[in-house]
Image (cartoon, rainbow, N blue to C red; front, side, top):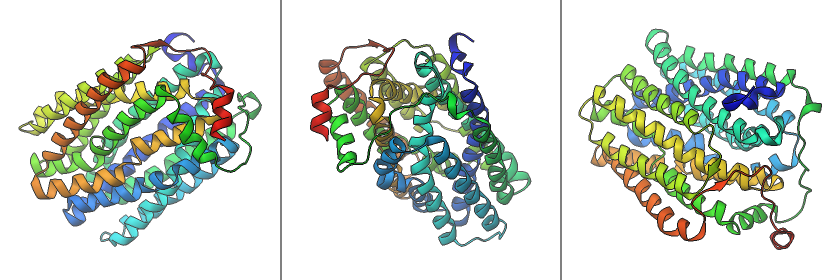
Amino acid sequence: MRGRTRGLRSRNFRLFFIGQLISNSGNWLTMVALTLLVLHLTGSGVAVGFVAACQFGPILVLSAFAGLIADRSNKLRLLKITQIGEMCQSFILAGLAFMHHPPLAALYATALAGGVLLSLDNPVRRSFVTEMVAQEDVANAVTLYSALVNASRIFGPALAGLLITTAGYGWAFGLDGISYISVLIALWMMHPEELRRVPVTPRGKGQVRAGLRYVRSMPDLWIPFVMLGVVGTLSYNFSVVFPLFVEHALHGSDASFTLVYTAFSFGALIGAFVVADRVTVGVNNIVRGAAAFGVTSLLLAAAPNVAATFPIVFVVGFSSIAFMTATTAIVQLRADQRMHGRVLALQSVLLIGTTPIGGPIMGAIADALGARIPLVIGGVAALAAALFGLLVGRRVLPAAQPVPPEPVEPQAADVAAAG
């Protein structure tokens, strides 16, 4: 295999890719279904923000330690455990939904349990990608996995809309639970001896702090992370902002929301494939992605009706993944392999672990000032991040650098200082 699919030369990665495509679609199905269920039970933006906080709050609290576990542990074994746990969570949500009037506290508690599992699963799963392929295929495998996630964001919401309107919320959650069977089969069919083993980080004191110091010592990492923190907190709250925007500002239905989310996800998928063959990455890629995302978010906030949102939200999805993929490529390819889990965990905190902060705030703003205002705030924040990258990043980093054949290793003195 060549070009854009060369990462699939690895049998283990092919199995992982197929299993995750099915399972990730189920994950997005549950996210959409849970958001709409809470919105219909309460009609409150704050409640929608709070359930998002339950889903992603543990990432904010636990990801640094989860990343350390990822660096120390057998990732294949750990993934089997987390996938079984997430499957059980989906079946519990299905049981609650079949009650027709489930208690909110139970929904929040189940979402919180899923968030704990996600905080552990996310850095392990993303770091595991680099172990399944040869070093020269890592960049392509990372991009293919990003495309997989975004393909799932198309299938999952579309399937959620179909199931919710025809069968109900319970069947939507139940199908997600069933989808985990595919990834579990894929994990058990893998050949562990073919994995590209990375030296396990030994136990020791201060290893979480060492990861933070390592990021701080590398402009290639901390500058994109600052931008990602701003955008993640104020702009990447799609699971909260989109349903409120469609229902309250555009007066759309569940079907309208799923169509809008599908258009957004389709744009993200196309964006992921467009950047799949990128051979250089630098601050220019991040600045352009953030600026385009900010401008299109402002245009989306001004959309007069559901139909008008489709072309705009497509470009929002495209530009959001261009920004995200650039930051992910830098993290995956610049970070030392021994720090991968901790660095990826920190990226998860900045990307989705900030939702517990931004989600409830944006929900409250939507309730108080209107459902369009969170999109305006998110657009302005993305433009501010782009300006920061333009003014600060360009002074410190080259505009673009070739993707190295091996991850950049820190100097021995830096490692010693971090310890």
